[in-house]
Amino acid sequence: MILCLDTSTSICSVALCDSKGIVALKENKEGRSHASGLTVLISEILAEGGMTASGLEAVAVSKGPGSYTGLRIGVSVAKGIAYASSIPLISVETTLSMFYGITDDLREKYGANSDSLFVPMIDARRMEVYYAVFSPEGTVVRETAAEIINENTFSTAGESGLILIFGDGAAKCRDILKGKNIKHIDEFTNSASHMYVPVYKAFKDQRFEDVAYFEPFYLKDFITSQPKKKISGR
Image (cartoon, rainbow, N blue to C red; front, top):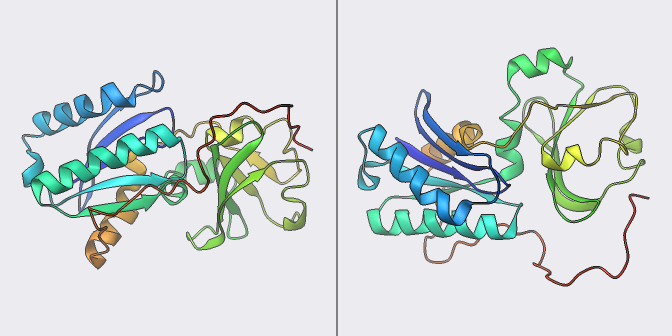
């Protein structure tokens, strides 16, 4: 059994999974309460499953990009569990786990096909988002990067296939990204349950992190200063 943690967005999510899939899931979607809520969710899900941390095969964490504070909390807790219980630490890039959150039902509903592109987006600052681009099979077409979105962001992609955009970063771009072949998947929310496939692949391949030195994938520096003027999406 592997414990999966996702605190990359405003949703605090904890899942237990085994080699067959998700066994249990607990989430808090009420806001950024990760500092006070994450360890509670972990305690509850382990207790209800009759598990202890030392009985886990590994602990996995969504490493980012995403909320600076959320990532720091999630990674710190995951590292603490791994160290105290002497179990491996696994990390999964957040955009990759988001890709695996697009189910077959959603693909069918939005008309995805072999030419479609999947674009997980995470809210950054103002009109900036973190996003990556994946093929239907999960091949990385564009590595995760931070970018200020405008109406021409996907203009070079052509109109031969659908561009499916999802995540809390996509929501704020709805009025800007309006191409004929662009569709926004409204039902999607980040969840630790999406981590299952890449986590077990990493576990099988023994791709573990160094507990002492592992850090979140922040992608860019944390900036506390306020902007002097607004930045439009153009």
